Image (cartoon, rainbow over all chains, first blue to last red; front, side, top):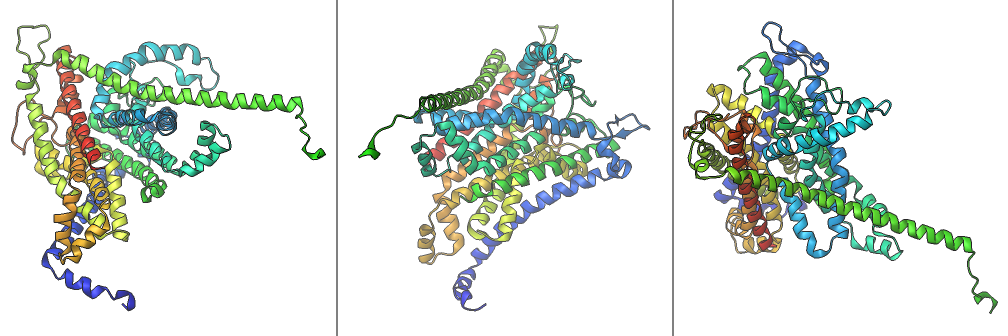
Length: 322
Length: 300
């Protein structure tokens, strides 16, 4: 208390209004519900995962077993964890250059009349439900990869020493880690592009104008002024895309092939945490060890994506404040 | 005098700088073409998705799809009656409506709290962070959460579990837009209302909500669009059903789940029906999105 608290009594007297009290506590209560939801998700996933963690211990993280035969049940998460991380990282590699190109085009290159329609179209890409990406992926992208990409790359790139094995084809269904990464990349493209566009627009025009005044080309202004100014937010936007890619379920389930084996090449079928949960959870018995193993995978997915999303938010905080 | 004599630079330097200039221009041009190509690639994907949906969806879209329930494949027996998706359409409408009805008030109140009561407070910052994490959290985990919380105790999949999972997805979307929209309201408006002696809750409900109405509605519409196409959480909560059901305590069909099951069935006639379902969902979701955007533009 003291001089700083002087306006307080006035506010207090207003606060006497019963409606005010009720409304503020309603709002605060709703906030508590949201906190409880996140806490509840962590706790319930952990409780569900407990039997599996007890049974398999830390070995769960490294074991590639997945054996639901009764009496010989043995579950490990390594394949799904590997598939989740690999497909998401590959998707980022595909999506970031294209997203950067779109953001650069929309902020610096496109004529004014084109910016809004093209921007809206890209944003609508983000609104398409993931099941649609899955179906489109299965009936359009999968055959394309199967007929044109897999064999062509397989023929030419396998000969490369050291990394050639990545392009080996042993499975020809077209559903693979590579296909999943392509579809994921298309899905996260609009999120990354929109974030990049928004942060590029926040660069004070006077910075860019002074560089243009020195005779810099647009690319030089982007490379020398805009990117250094926005690099932290750009990385934040990429992390946001990564977080989305890690947890994406339906699109991946359609196109990854759902094989619980360690993939040996990009064109091998694989699985991710989200897709193995979607495929196997509905058909597993209530309270079974399999269900618990799936909860354990869900818990790990939560931890991974929470860390990525928290990092993304931390990096984007300056943008949020502005 | 002698200092002003113009001395031409050495020829080698001129050549070097000309070469440098043309290289810089060439790099710039290359990047420009790359960016144009990237944008065209993005637009191409949208066009490809829409074209595929229209082409395959319209081919099998008819009155039967909209009015009949699921029927097993008639593969090899053309005289068998054709099935439809009405059970899934109704189930989706019910679950989306209940999910929105539960999630919206909570999201609205939290957004209000963040904007009007907790600006800059530690609790507010934590709450904003948690809500943002929920916004991007994998939706299948929300399905697992509701499974553990509702499906297990109830002993089976149910429509209400599906609606609750969708409600959790609605909340953070509404929180974000509500807070953003309320913060756009000038403080002078708030001061004017308080200056007239109105209590704060009346200021918020009667003035701020009214001033931000179209923005808040946009948020709700975006949330509806988001959950209308959600599949993963429903797989673990309402599971899907082959007949029309209005009973919230048993498994309930939904359009995305019906699409998922029929697209993976392997029977060409069921896949055709899945395509018309996909067309319905996408057109609905995109239409809601466009309406929401138009509302927002009218505001700005």
